[in-house]
Amino acid sequence: MKQMRRRWMMFLPTVLLLALAFSTTVLAAEEEMEYVPGLHATFWALVPPIVAIGLALITKEVYSSLFVGILMGGLLYSGFQFELTITHIFVDGIIGVLSDSYNVGILVFLVILGAMVSLMNKAGGSAAFGQFAASKIKNRVGAQLATILLGILIFIDDYFNCLTVGSVMRPVTDKFKVSRSKLSYLIDATAAPVCIIAPISSWAAAVTGFVEGEDGFSIFIRAIPYNFYAILTIVMMVGMVLMRTEFGKMKEHEKNAALKGDLFTTPGRPYENTKAEKISTKGGVIDLLIPIIALIICCVIGMIYTGGFFEGESFVTAFSNSDASLGLTLGSFFGLIITILLYQIRQVLSFKECMNCIPDGFRAMVPAILILTFAWTLKAMTDSLGADLYVAGLVESSAGALLNFLPAIIFVVGCLLAFATGTSWGTFGILIPIVVAVFQNSNPQLMIISISACMAGAVCGDHCSPISDTTIMASAGAQCEHVNHVSTQLPYAVVAAAVSFVTYIVAGFVQTAWIALPLGIVLMVVALFVIRNINGVIE
Image (cartoon, rainbow, N blue to C red):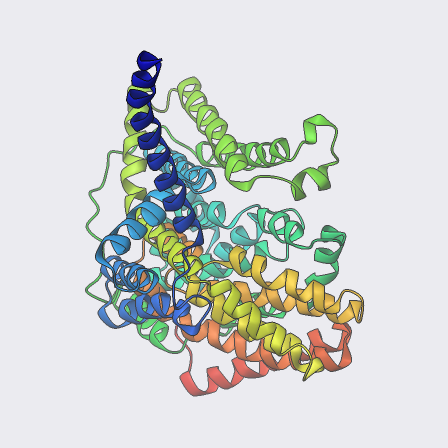
């Protein structure tokens, strides 16, 4: 009996220690799960991205500006506690976004695409296409229209669009003295605005997934004529090129390029002194076209594969259910393999030269990867502060009053949210479910218009925001200094947004695209003629 009591006396402290450790762990986990910052779901949730954007535009330096915004988000989340600020920034922020499989897939896609661009350049395919295009294109207008056409044709994905169009058309636009800022605008304006009105694109798949309780794909199709910002941006872009006029800071950049041959204008010209690499003289146009065609086909197959096409789903359903990150990664990988095999068969590059292009392509993507990482981290900060709940509350509170003005209001809210967070898809995810809940049973037609306003506003804000991944990719594709791209593009996006806002007011009352869309196009054309009369023509 004494021996058993002695054993219990020895065993009891161990049990108590284990229970104490377990309870401490559980309490800590519960505290961590239940922690809500004091400024959660308030206007302060939007302060970090506003600070980052403001600093980027003032200082012309994007890395430090983004980091200051991230730091502000960490401080507001933690209530200015040092330890919680640091752990939130690095554990929940930087490490968290780089641990996300979707984000990693996008980074892998960028690296592979960078490697393919490096391969096409070194093989002489880009130079050969440039010479071919230069023989067909006679002036600056033709070079810009060719860039727009290629951007519209590559509607699968905005990342793919930005980097491919940039690498292919850069030699052509350089020859005809089109500034890098204008090239980056043309790329950006044919990326998200084209993808958001293309039924077969990664963006269509994303939007479809956010429309719960409805046929998402058919709603997306019906919403296309009401996507005024995307349509009017294309009208404005083509009109500006044909009228040969510019305004704002873009006018200075284009004048310097056309008259002085200076493609960069400002001191920030990170790509100007890029060391010229040895290019194969064996390359031809086919060494550019086959890799790009292979990349498009492989990316489409990769996306429908992730959506279950080879398991019996229809093409449309598979595309709607696709995982864009994984699909683009798989597609770009096989596109890279096909490109290397092509160059081996044609003996354009040796196998060693092909392998050397892979780290070269990675190095070319490092600035874009760094900015993307910081932008994703900044979004994580705003998410943790409840920016989505704050904006959702604003939209729901305005749903009852001013019903016919609601599409225009939603458009503005979408613009501001996407501008502050740098994400279109995140804006879709916040606003579209609210719109469906408000109008689903009361006014289906107004629901379609409002969903389109969500998409248009998200694209507009994404188009304007310096922390948007698409904007970053457009800068990288054109090899333009990022702040130059943002500052020259912003006035153009604001004009298209203003005309779109008026058009959404009209659409809220007439509730038909047959009246609203033609009126919007007429307003845009009038605005372009006014701009031309004020600013003149650039020869």
